[in-house]
Image (tube, rainbow, N blue to C red; front, side, top):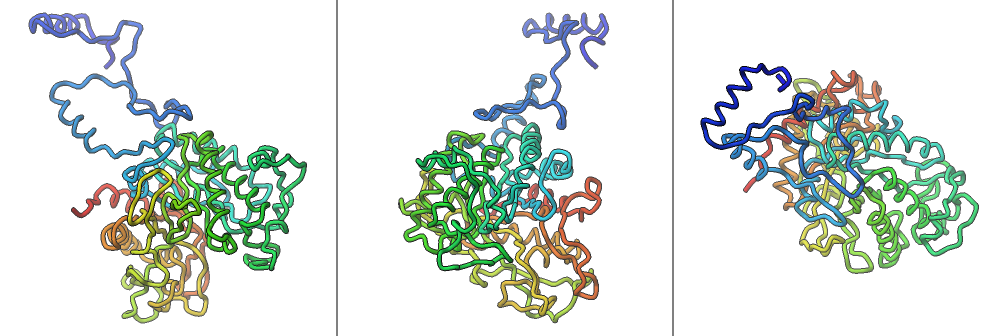
Length: 477
């Protein structure tokens, strides 16, 4: 009930009470004022400016003495997500602890009109670092037409939670489609070159000896970072994502792109330029940069990346027989340091761009997608990088719901506690994957959706698992 609707008697009683106590001030609204209210999640919040992140919630009624201890406890337990110009190790780890992969690759892009279920997932679970939110594998001119929708979606989520970081990917793949992408003048100028009225050149980015030509199919290649054209292109891609509002960049398989990069000189130069651009243009003047690597020390003796990213490499249980997963008999898997090329215990430490040093750089692992082994589907081969003949997310999504929940809880804790420390597990949200029919071969669906089915009809409901695990997890002392 607002103050407008209070009766004259109740006002008089309140006044008499204050006078009797001999102190205090009667808090009220004038007839023309409404009391402060919390904003509506979808429409009312005010968007933060690029240089500011709100530190306080909108005005609310003052606390009574009995409420004060609870509020102080909440402030004491609040998780710190503040960063500007650089990031502390504590804040970095807080973000990685709430990382989720929501990758629109192969299904379009995130947009305000088509991804309301994504926003609900993020806000419901409390996700803070959204891996692979922009995943254009082979850049093409049509990708740029999606930028307004991506920007609008990011801004909309930030109205409800300004701490969320969205990550974009700059992958190890180019195609002849880059020949149709114009080079803006500012890209040339960043490298101290006179602007040219032309498009990027596919051939000028390829390895001179033909390495990796057609690596990803006809008319594709891994770009060679020692080529000036590649430097222009990767810088352009990264900066365009920063302009949209992305505050994280995944640079893919940099060891392929940097095959000829002696001493990592070109990668050091490129990432320094991207960071300088972020300092001026990024929403909080900083961008989280990572790649698929165990770690690299740059030409400046500083770690190239803010954290490392790698596939999680779950290993098939070799004691089980080959079988299709069922409700009663899933395909069990677990983690083991040293399995395949896993990162556990291998994340390189050193001095970071943000100025702090570490023996082990914090790292994030994910349920990756990289294709299935048709000849060995549903066969447990513990030494193989594929889990039961499948890539990681495909193996996971084919398991029964109860085991998916059990595995996520195990994986989240194991990576944080049992792998030498500093490790974090990115929860699955959406990704390319293959759902198999009971014949074990026929694909019935090409995408994993972890959303609440009430919000997205194809969602499998893993959103509830993610929310519960994050809320209930307690780190070991």
